[in-house]
Amino acid sequence: MTQRTIEILSPFFITEDNLSSPEDLAELFPKKQPIALEIGCGTGHFIAELAAKNLETNFLAIDIYNKGCYKTCKKIETEALDNVLVMRIEARYLLTHYIEKKSLAGVYINCPDPWPKKRHRSRRLVNSSFMELLLHYLQPDGDFYFSTDFDDYAEQVAEILPAARGYRNCLDAPLMTELPGYPISKYMQRFLDRGQPIYFMHYRKDGDVQLTELPKPDIRAGFRTRWGRASNE
Image (cartoon, rainbow, N blue to C red; front, side):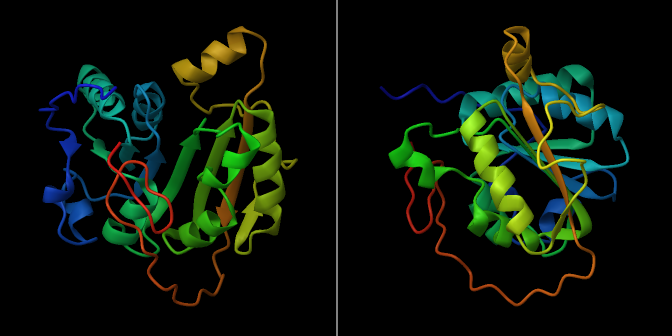
């Protein structure tokens, strides 16, 4: 069953029509300041709190779901924030088409789809290939934050990140169940209220890592994009 697409008229919502090149994104914010990216903004509670605490940073919040983008825009309007823009787009497609190399001050991924069935785990967003791709778009010493409520996903990423070249751990362990000062989304809070842990990771790009040019992946527009394949579900 196809869900009804909600028309989003918010001034904080942008589309590909607003971007013709990677340089255009910075021009859409009212202030010239560092840009960070949230992948999977959900209902917008996390990004609203983060942006309110970091007014000196501009944030682009993206989601593949129309309803999530709509709710996030409403939350941003309610909080009267001018340092957040929202876009419905797939993360890898965004990076390779509309983000300048070495431009992101930070990337936040909170509780992404864990694809819990073993045969589907290759569909998880955060893997070795994604971390290699992201390395090209984080600025030197740019931050990467990852959280998940799914034990297996946490263990998988906790194994991937120490082996990923160009990153260093900012925490005392591969993963933590508390991260003081980190905003807690409504989704996270539901699990915490049940006594289930949220796992956090915080890595930083090495400032002197040397990168070779990546061939541009075949990533097409779509909301269920995989490497070389896409659909508009």
